[in-house]
Amino acid sequence: MRLIFYSFSLILVMSLAYLANLESVKTKATMHSANLLRTEVDELKEELNILNAEWALLNRPDRLTDLVKWHYRELKLMPISIKNFKSIKSVELSKPSNRKE
Image (tube, rainbow, N blue to C red; front, side, top):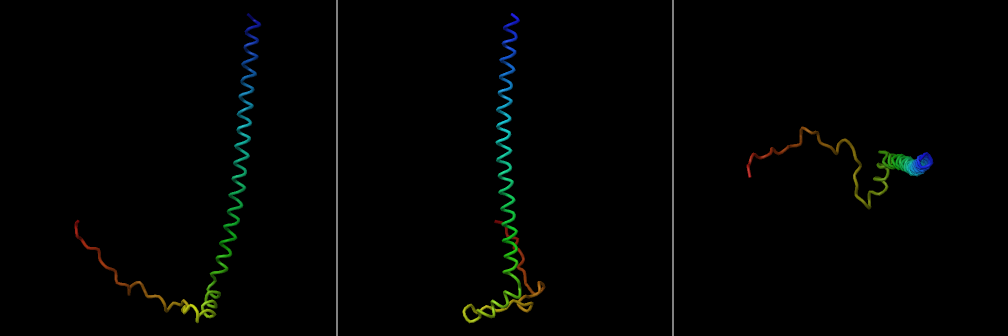
């Protein structure tokens, strides 16, 4: 009887060790994929920062003004200035109608 109990205990311990090893392998694989995703996110953030810097460089007001001057004949663009805008008080807003449908 003792032999059966020891055999059963040994098989149970080996089964639990195997299941623990499987969970360890799954955890390591998940951690590896999480690290890959974290690396990819960091690379994409860096790329986004570079694109934002390029966008800011390309949209400098002095550069845009020069582009307007250089390509005036083809595009007929006017330079942007404060004179091109109206004050908000001069804009007439329509009042919503109270019709029920």
